[in-house]
Image (cartoon, rainbow, N blue to C red; front, top):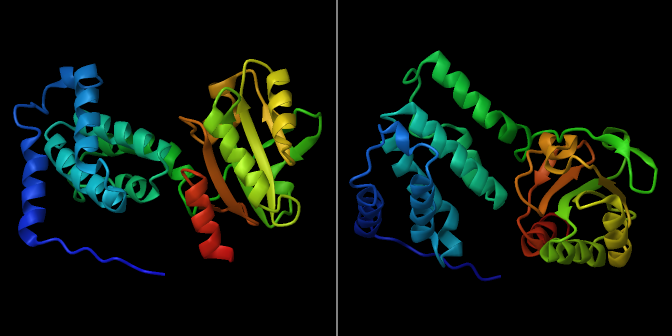
Length: 269
């Protein structure tokens, strides 16, 4: 295996940080009218994209640096700080960027005693759903009846590992991900597959599961995004995948099949 080490000069890092700061020139972070506005959302997306585009090796570190600059400026208005924090948590969590998400969950740029108790409680309410499903935490339990009428309880299962997948029947990428899992993982001995589907109806889920020839336990709920599993696991996009160990600890949240394969190779092979 070949490792490539890239060194960056102090001047280039300083120039990059200056560029990140200059991006926000003319933006009044104390203006509450900007909060949740389309203009601010578009500017945030453009900001993060401009510093990470095409540089996968440094995606997390560049994202963290950019977030640090934006959140430092947002401190003048805690409502703006909260908005940017939640906006970024939703985005980076959906992308499976655990390193960036963990950074955000530590309330960057805020020192102890810098905010009021009320502000701290508001921040806690924003981050609580993400804290529950971060790597290292115990996955929420699920107890229900599969699309085939079989009762299943996650906490009662004695499988070695679990692959928990939230997917959609009209998402081709979700289907590809699930097929890769079926083809390359031992879903009878090493892993137990548990899926939760978004669909127009249960019949669509049945057809998709049969077409993909998926073993395991598959669930559908008419409440869709508002179903208990989707809410408990704070699902904002599909596919979202969790790998659990035998104690139901979340040990990986792969963004795609390549990331899952890399993690599996590193851990088991």
